[in-house]
Amino acid sequence: MNSLAAEHRADAARSGLTDEILVALQIESVRPQDLTVPGAASAYRIPYFTMDGTRNYFERWRYLFLQHTGVFPILWASRQ
Image (tube, rainbow, N blue to C red; front, side, top):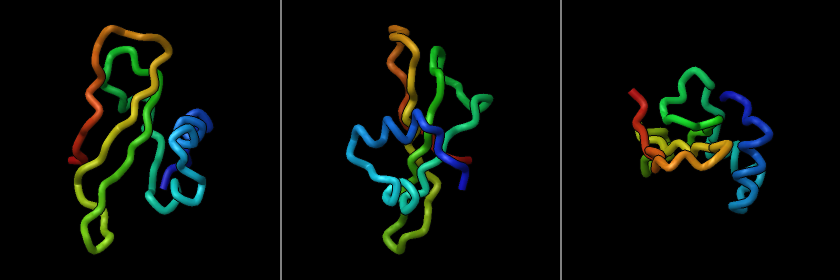
């Protein structure tokens, strides 16, 4: 698992997610070169799991912006 950037950890903490939860859910930062949303400064991915606890191919990306871009970001992506 990639480490989670401090800004992403702080953003998740505002939603009540502790370090233990972040590790258990395998939440990780997205590499800057993988960002595809205009104006996004950074992002972290939140994977989804099957009923037996294994990761499936869906994940949600949480984008962080430096300023409002006027563009509604695409918050869902699938791993391919």
